Structure formats: structure tokens, C-alpha cells
Image (cartoon, rainbow, N blue to C red; front, side):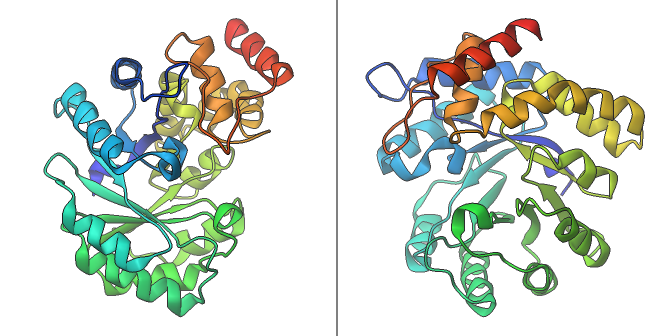
Length: 291
């Protein structure tokens, strides 16, 4: 699955001042990333505020991104939730003709057992006509999917091709990298740990900050995959402060502030999220201007 190697970006959903989806800004964001080295695009993931996007908006977002992309980069679609039947139904209902892969988040809030995770993703695998990347993010779901469960899924289902691992735990990355099948992709979901994961043998990252600084972040990942540690870490250190800043309050308020200062979209988010505070916005703006 070479199409999911390198830097993918978890695209935000741009909003107008009155919180409508801003499709012109979305096109601008897609083109900015294509032109600056992003390897693939992730649509309607959790960073896209998928919890507050309507079904109609989701379908329009897919159509607009697919049209703007025009086959230039692989497209990965976020389809996940804590109602397994609903996730399966969505996979069967959606037109996935323009989509190359599915990113499916581990069930949140319900706190399933490891067997529950396994059975959920078994159902997703059987319903999906596209390759599946499972997504472990215990800081948001409230339950960690253990490496043994991820590796069991990798062994049992041919179309589960990778994991976006966002446990913010370097040892968990190493446990996966040590025992994963050779063709199974270990993809970082932690921008701050991405370079370390890649240097350990990871396939790359699905990044939030990458959509703001696609040239630099994708170059860092490429250098890491080539084993050029010194050059890669120079970029890591340049971006380290902004990576911390964008997650200080909530995601995607931080990255939307970055994109506002880059004149790509507004900083608007839908409730229950609120925009970054003035103090954080000022620091982000100063970083972007200096960078």
C-alpha cells in the first residue's frame, strides 16, 4: 500500500463566518497541500469536525475534494463511530468510487474490551470495499486498543492494511513496529512523535500540522524514511513549538488559527468547540509570521 506511505494530512473543514462549510476555502486548502508535497489527503476525519458535519455536507465535501484533487493524490475517507451497525451501513451507502482507502476510528465512549475492538473492526473490514486503516486514539476514545489487538487484525484481515497509532506512547509504536507483518503500515497519528516513529520503521504520518506546513513536514518525514536523521531533526526542531501550540486548547481550533494566519480559511469551529483564545492566536500568528 505505497499510496499511504509518507505524509497524509487530516484536512479540516473550513467554515465561513456564519459556520457554513466554505467550499472555496476547502479547494484552496487542497491545492495548497497538493502543490507543497503532501502525499495523500484524509477527508472527514475527526480533525474535520466530522461529529458536527451533516450527512449531506459530508457527501458534498467528498465531491468537492475529489473534483479539486482530480486524481492527483490518493484520498482516504474517515468512516467510523461507536455504533458498528451504523458504520457498516455508511460504508455500504457511500459512493466510494473516488476514494482509495478508509480511516476508521476506534469506537469512542463505549470503552469496548479488546475483543470488542476486534469484532468491530472485523465488521468494518467485511463491509469495506476499500483498504482500511484502523485508528487508535485513546486520549479521545477513552480506551487504548492494545498492540496485540492491532496485530491480530493485521494478521486476520487482508484489507486492514495499517494503523494510525495516536496513543502518544513511543513504546507502543515500537511494540507495533517490532511485530507487525512486513506489509502492514504503522502510521503515526502524533505529530510530535512522528519522526521517531518513522526512524523506527514507520510508514509515515497522518498529520494535523502538516496541512499548515506541508512542504516542511513532508520533507521531514521523507528525510526520516531515508535515514537522514540530522536533516530531519532540523525540521522537527523548527516545527516543534507550533506542534505544541496547536494542541494546547483543542483540535482543530489550533490548526485553524494557523490556516487563518496563512490566509486559507477562517478560524471558525462548530460548538461544542470554540476558536482559540486571543492569547494563543497571537502566539500562533507570531510563529507563522516569523516562520
